[in-house]
Image (cartoon, rainbow, N blue to C red; front, side, top):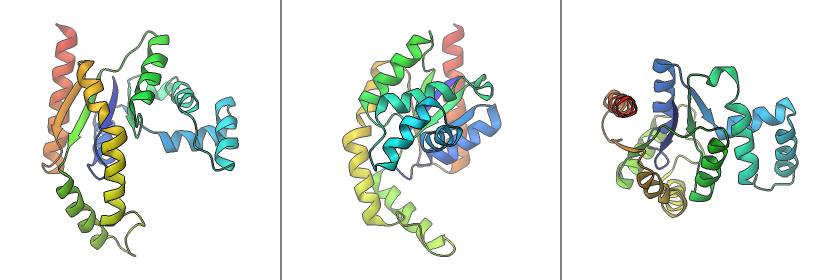
Length: 197
């Protein structure tokens, strides 16, 4: 099963991806981790990414998709994977679809964690207050407002993109953690039944 977890910063994508990974044998793939691993491994794509990152440049979509393509061919991805942090915009989604199509594959589902911006701000402020040794640099209302603005401008259009593709599953990300996990599992089981019918 090939999945994407979509939602604004602070919605709990990473937490839920970890839970689904542990319970169902899928691999959570973070683009940041994959980039660092490709650079460390000295792969062809990793070398290109390293040169760009050393110069302070953004790594272009085709290189990121190349790293995802390499990583998803590894043995631990045989049961499927969850992309966390990619795609971030429609151009990246199109590049990902093209890469998957070249392998005669496609995404099974995109899980959107729906959370109101006001709830996210309260969560971030709560998390900042609870963090031992002080909050992370981006755990404050101002930083979150900026990240939310970028999300709404660049990433939120993916909701329509994947809805049109017929693979978007919307989950109420404002429920408690266990309820959100249960809702994701139910949505994915429904998807499996759809495929079987």
